[in-house]
Amino acid sequence: MENRQENRMGTEKVSSLLMKMGMPIVLSMMLQAMYNIIDSMFVARMPDMNGIEHTGEMAVNALTLAFPVQMLFVAFGIGTGVGVGAMLSRQLGQNDREGVARTAGNGVTLSLIMYAIFVLFGLFGMDPYLKSQTSDPVILNMAHQYLAICTFLSIANIMWGIYEKLLQSTGRTQLSTAAQIIGALTNIVLDPIMIYGLLGFPTMGVVGAAAATVIGQFATTIIAMFFQYRKNKEIPAGWKYLKLDGSTVKGIYSIGISAIVMQALMSFMTYGVNIIFGQVSASAVTAYGIFYKIQQFIFFAGFGLRDAITPVISYNYGRGSRERIVQGEKWGMIYVTVVMVIGLVLMQFFATPLARVFGLTEETEELCVRAMHIISAGFIAAGISIAAQGIFQALESGNSSLIVSLLRLLIIPLPLAYAFTLSDNALSLIWWAFPIGEFAAAVVAVVLLARANKKRLPGSDHDEGLKRKK
Image 1 (tube, rainbow, N blue to C red):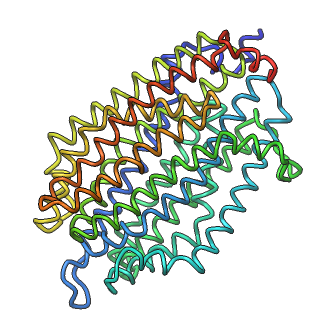
Image 2 (tube, rainbow, N blue to C red):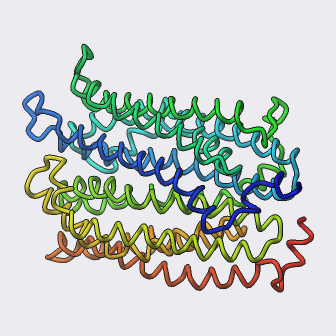
């Protein structure tokens, strides 16, 4: 009887459990990546307007400049959600229902505070940010229009990070997937209608792309909230739990801060790449922006499996089940690596047809294909780092996750990319900065994972610390 009442994260076979929990997340995240690709595709094919040649390609450039800020919204929302989810999964394993409710409520309050901070950025920081990357007045205008809408209506984007993790942390990945699918489909349907002015809508260009994105985000978050409060009985709800509790906030961010920084580093890396590549060629910036959206289709699948690894291991960490933790690590690493191998094959053999769907100029298309061929060489190493980071988060080893992220996203690739821009063959060399960073980070991730297991697993030298927490 006791086994039937326990969450399936503590009872089901780990290899199949990770697939059951992970595949819905993978599906939803790949769909999210797909609508990012489709969004860029529709924008890239905008007709020339106001006598400006290659309007669509300039619009893609504008969206590429705005993208790091959008990623920052996701970083704070998802990063806080990771902290909420990991802490909540552990509390579920310890049967601490009051703690579960307080963690969930504080997560919602924190998302509202984050939104207020981003509104301030929109009011005072947006223009300096965009002007630091380009001086082209057409691209600046497009980027400002797009980013203003995405910033001032970012509340749904940020809150989604919390509600997604509330559902995932209790094993209800199918509900979070359903919410994401509906939002993604909403965005995909509205994109051409609002960008090109179909079905009686005015032609809105990049404004239409931003509006479609925001409407899709609201659809996703509202549905996730419905599922959370109507279908998820494992998390008690109440207004009193919205009041911030110091120890709860500290617990959330003791785990979540590394996830926020890890996600934010992707934003900083893209921002840095935009500036560095802009010194070489505007086409290189556009090509990287297109490549990054395509790459997300593969990486988001890996992130989806990582997000299944974390609650499973975290739950069993709370229970003190060494065997299930080890199984979670083993199968999680295998599954993520398989995904990245598939991504490598796709990038190597289908780079040209993938680039051509965007209708780019010949120069930009050639650079995009080159980026896919070279950067994908580091995908398998990236998969090792991604899986390891999910394990680090579950084992309360956030600093290790942060170190790996710093290496693969900032410390190695950006200085290398800058150094390569000084070469006469810059347009061929700059792409190699990324796989070099991935391989170096993967080596460090393996070393840190071995150390984390030695210190954290039940039955280790530090097991007494885990017992005290329980």
